[in-house]
Image (cartoon, rainbow, N blue to C red; front, side, top):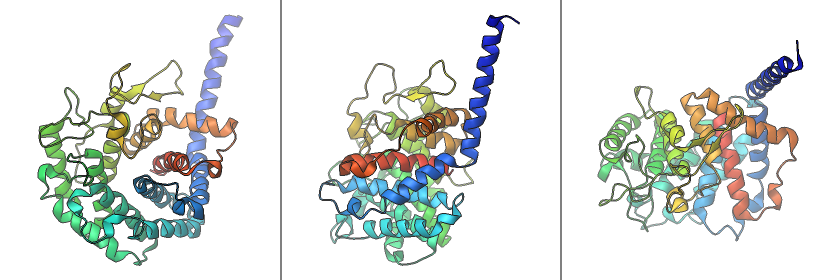
Length: 361
């Protein structure tokens, strides 16, 4: 056998070996455990929640929600860490339930214009209550669950506004609200999610798909069905939360491959995959950060893609994105989150949290 025949064979053996190694890494939860250790260590740091440099509570609320979701899922593969997980879940729930941290708990707040808060504060409280069965924050969780259950179905366009300072509706935030409603149904045995999910998804399909796609814009208003055009982060969170919230009775759903078709960028390597922020190669999405708020473009795309692939059973894409994280863990030093300024630390930990959700799916 000549050297030119040996080279392809050797390459195939190396690729096969790498494939097996990545598969074993995932099945043994090595990356998931590494990310769990980061979340347990960093979310328990007292300075993270009280820093005066953390000027935007929405950033930390999103981290609390995604972090608690990752921790809740970690109980399935790391039950030996239950005590630590429960402790961090309590700290996150206590933070989101405090009127001193979030103004939405104070008198006068119009919750019909606060669906971002309802979705992510409710998810944090729900994750704690489902994991521990402790009712310390029951009043807060019930208030959110009952409001969402009754107001989403009566909301204009089957959506609620995300914030009082904007007059448009965000499908990603409302998908997250439906996910929170599914947690409420799971704990209390109510049946809010199914009818709300069907009405909401029917409205999206009938009125809001963006041009030729089956994906909505990042935001729409009463006068503009595409107030903020789609980007990978906002739209990816929309389909990931949609999948996580989807009732068992719903068999047809927007496929995540539609998202991958528009935002995925491939290469010659079967073990690498990139996600571009915008729908079209070489064209930036206008107002990308505003559309992804409080997330940022060029920060979370691969993590969101990993979660979406996990939720929708996209194994090939999942392992291509997973391989990048595994290689980084194998060959590079751990990130020192404690040395970061609060805003950068919250962003970095949010990436870990979204990955952790995917790895625990």
